Length: 191
Ligand code: AMP
Image (cartoon, rainbow, N blue to C red):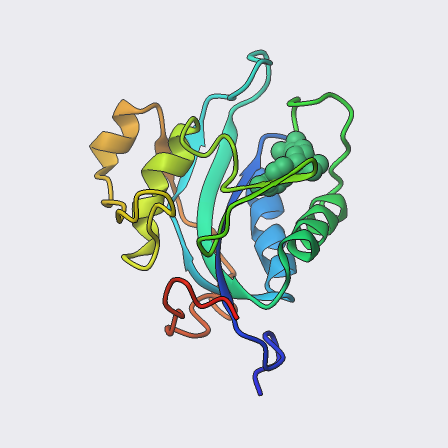
């Protein structure tokens, strides 16, 4: 039995992460390490620097990435864990949509569609955020748009730049947790 999934059917999830406060690379790296206690990390996109999104424009630029993982957590358990990891990196919800040490969003949870006051899946804003849209193609052909079923094409560096996304050096120190398993269960693997 594998330790992470505990014998339960692994579910493919796509998460988005961002940081625009303090040591942004450390927040992302340690955030991923924290998440790896509950999931297998299969692929991590390029890291891009991009202008702040949302209604508060006057804040520092973000470092952002998306990742593909598998987990046995139910959607709300997953939200709890992502929020715990945010808290561990000193995240405080002082100003809504304001600067943050670490933001972790659930983009896709297999092909599940959920509309709950605390949790909407797919993430309601995923198509509106250039970094999510443009980096999904970095995660391989196993990631598809759960609505259209279409795969995402990888983007060239120039294509990312044209969207205001500036690729920076990859995060270091994740070798031991990344690509722990290359086998990603196929879509629709829900029990
Ligand atoms: P944020 O400011 O991005 O951390 O999100 C604030 C709230 O969005 C959280 O407290 C969640 O309850 C809610 N939320 C709704 N859908 C999602 C989702 N797919 N992923 C993460 N948070 C979500």
